[in-house]
Amino acid sequence: MVALVVDELRRTIAPLAKVELEGVRWETHAWPSVGEDAQDVINREIGDFDLLVGIMWTRFGTATKRAASGTGEEFERAYAYFRTYGRPKIMFYFRQTPFYTTDPKQWRQFAKVLEFRRKLEKLGVLFWEYSQPIEFERRVREHLTKHILELTAVELIPQAPAPSLFLSYKREDLPRVEPVYEALRAAGFQPWIDIKDILPGRQWIEEIEAAIKRSDFFLPFVSNRSAAEGHARRRSTFVSKEIDVALERELLFPPPSSQAYILPVRLDPVDPPLQLAQYQWVDLFAGGGLSSLISAIRTEWSHRPSSAK
Image 1 (cartoon, rainbow, N blue to C red):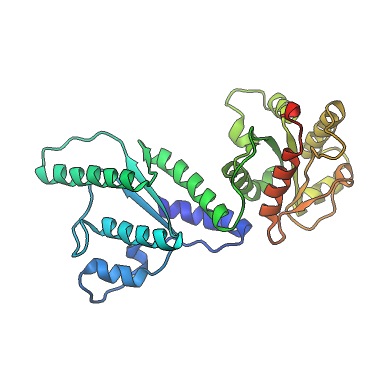
Image 2: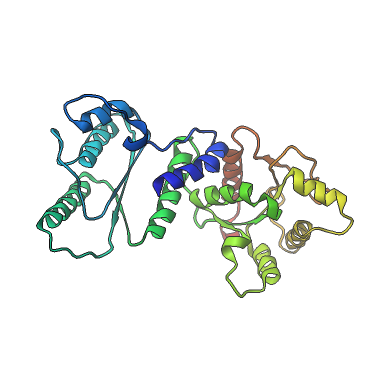
């Protein structure tokens, strides 16, 4: 499951953050050779990495010549490097789903897992617990996103309280906008997007308008596709209607003149619609575009008076 999440982030978050992301496992990145034992070979052939993700439930693993298990040895090596060089980052997850066995070997394995947990606690390692695989998938995706942004020098300390952000986009651009939503959420903001934040059975038009009116920032995403559609049609697209609602909200509750409510985001180098021509854009396709967007939101929010937050 970690490999699937890493592959997803490699295709979504990594290009925005301008980093290369690769999941490394002994099954895919080691090859037959000779060493003190199998783990020694794995240690040499895998090499350096920036993040260590450990997952445990009932089994600790087979002892090596240097540690109680291969996983334990990998942690020891990573922790020693972290203490000296500040990397790699270490993320451990323990599954809490109850289990039962009458096999003494399995009980001894589980006892080693509990002992390892206590060791992490004593060393000051914060680990996470989960019950079901779907919960683990959500957690590891969120945590990996935060680490990726941190490794690329994107500030992650949010202002309090966190601003709410409405993301307006053309449905066909969802695969490009959804990673931005996840990155904004990981950065400590409260982004709002229809496919994730409208509950089943709700009136979606009313929900969207209400979300725009209560948002602290309105982020319209413009692409080649949405711009072409907007120029080709005489009638308004739904994205343009959302922009109209945001402009109306800005007139009714204007921020101070030195601050911004509408922060347009270009996915492609296209001309903005006439409704937004007077606003300064953030170019997500440019180098450092994601960092610039996060920085712009944080700067604008920091200038808001406390009474407006």
